[in-house]
Image (cartoon, rainbow, N blue to C red; front, side, top):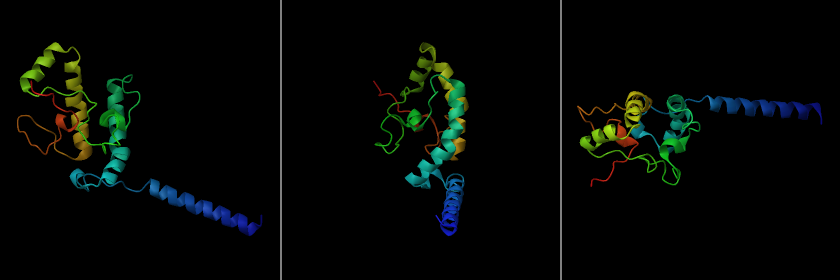
Length: 159
């Protein structure tokens, strides 16, 4: 190989590396610059991968490192998420009681329920609300646009 060809090969490799590195550090579109509701599915996917997953993974793993040893899209979006276009709430996440009375009954009858409620309310809800720049749901002043339990969990059927 001639010196000219060698230099061209090196220059081409350097240019490709520079292009890849510049794209790797490109700013991901998302809140607060672009509202979650206004983002395209592709933008949401990039934002979830670059911002939400790295933010939520250590929170879940600190809560239960064994259960959440593997933390990825499927953890929250469930199996078949790609086929469902990552639509939430997830059919694979435990549904929640549909009334305040049923919810409080679970707090008394399900031994792990209070621990999970504290974790979700104290860690997951504020972190996701912040990551998506959506107001946190407040049951004392319900706002359907706020981020709350129903964004991820289905509600049990009323019996």
